[in-house]
Image 1: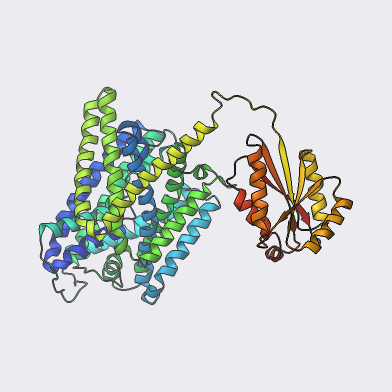
Image 2 (image 1 turned 180 degrees about the vertical axis):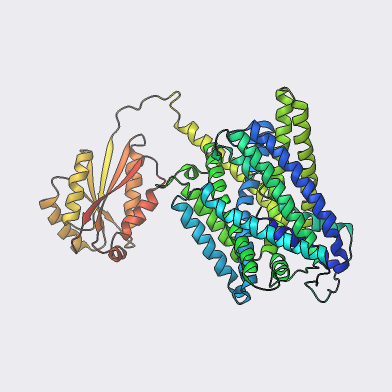
Length: 568
């Protein structure tokens, strides 16, 4: 329902380019969108009964249309959820700045504040509680409906003063393309229709019936609020304003100023939009975990934190939404063109998948079900084409490109996991013969840390070699003498370094030891200091880091550190 707060405004902002005389098109456009919303809602009602465990577009398309369409739907949904957060919070902040114009210049900061609150709350394990969320939802319904009823009463009981006292200068011609653009913008009213079908298990038993009933009620409320706002905006001749939203202008005019009823509408609008953003925090991590389970996303997205939340998905969603808010300046109108492609791609693929499911299974009454979902698929595909054409240069091309890149990325991740599985399989595996372990202990001197590491090295293998890189012959002679006393019989290998390099001769020696026994192991034991203060790490262990990095991709070479804790 939150999209009601900005859907009508997007229609009006487009039509007004052709002047105020073009605004009458808003009403027929709104009626068409309302009918389309009802058809799609009844289509998703069938998805609820077919997928009582949750029928997101990814699952429906993957099972019934194919893997590639499923990945396209998954990519579209992930993008849609990111944009839901960005658009909803930006629209909520617009409601605040409309009530308090002095805050308009701080809208990016306000957007990031609300985003941080949602991210922290979800990382802490907040769940969508029906009772908690019911309060702001009913508050929004009452406040918005009151505005529409009072506004309609004033219209029917006498002439009303228009919001805008002057017209606007047309900057474009009223063409079919412009009307289609307005229609495409207004279709934002349909976003979120699929949310209930994604979360059927969250309902009380009987889950299917309650979810289906809720979807029908929600669709009816959305149509009522959207059409009511559209008709009232036309009656009051509301014009777009970059400093104040259409809903704010309407509420201010209907209630006769910025009194308590006005602030109630603005507060309710902000709350419902923030709740809409929070819905994505449930759906994005869940979809990412499902795709990770299918090995199309990194397995880290399957990990749950100590509060049983998919923490990695929450963090990624927050970071991407924050990036969009900063790049687009927290402007809802700049984000809307990016929003619609992903929404209607998932709509079309989900409905097409349901049509194919009914046709394949041919259960009793399948023709009726197939007709409803087929009609939904055709209509949403038509809208998708309209949106793609009219919004292509406004940013839709970017979403199309990102969806394609994501699908390629999903397949590359799946291919990587398959290659890893093929290399790890025990099929045709023959146990290796007993292996030899050559242990190399690089030293820079003879002290307690080295002797502790030496004791550990001797526990690994009888073949232990201490290695010292010579840079000064006098120091080398002193180390030889100390090693004879403390070396416990372990061989000391002294490497020459004509260019006074410490790491390169050592790495060459390790590689030679590995190549000499290609089927065996070489273990490099590194004595490392553990300072008492964290900033002391900058003064120690720099060479150890270089050695670890250089040997990271060397087969059969193991690098282990033996810590020596310093007291101060």
